[in-house]
Length: 363
Image 1: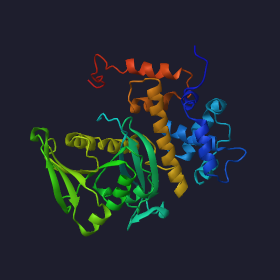
Image 2: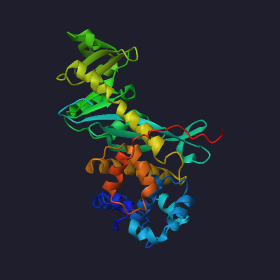
Image 3: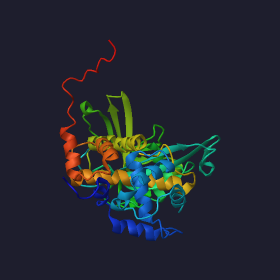
């Protein structure tokens, strides 16, 4: 019988504590207290994410039921609903270059409960602006704003990485900001607008059997756009047969084939799937606090748990999906089974039953 660490403690061993402590030092507050540290708060909230707790009272009840095991979870502080509330309220294309998908999702809130997040007339919301590394579908940049911040403004915060590709939808069209990315020697692929004013400089031959309709070098002719972006752009029109739709792409990269640019844009859907996955499987539908910091803290810890599980999946070479891993962890955090054994055993047990007919309870 294995008598080592609890599953939760094994999972948290993959958390880089030196990075965690740097973040704590960067954002000081009145916490930690002598009885409840930053790490205690993180561990409690991560536990809540992994076990699908519904409220602060639910977290407190569950952890206190395992009081004797809290030390082995790494939690040293006193667990109480009021303590948690106070703590939360405180401040597919192969490329040599890195490819990122940039997008924004809105997380709806109740205006009467979260008045600080006023979004529209009778609605509250926060926005999560995310830069996803497409090599592993891992977020490398996240900014949480109020619902009124337009998605294009996140380009003012983002520091472009020279040589990398940034894939964006039409909402990020701002030629001043795009030219800034160009000057930083980074590449962008953005969905083009139909009414774009431009002049064709040169047309390249395309194979229409691939879905390409045109590949052009263009110069912008709009009065403002031509000043904001004085360089040429590559304009690609592509027919998506699956959805019976023509798509237009703009990029400042003239080296990649037009078909590769079109395929690269399709990878942008990975960030949409990431948003869907986060909203479905992590605890951001119900919040443990109502202040701005409480909401942001919970979203950040939800993302951290996602990344931590993804790291464990890669390090231990687990074939099971992230969803499956989370389901297993939600039921086994207080067990002492080795983590790799626990997760790898789940792969062999995931085979369907030979007879999966429902039992006949009523004759």
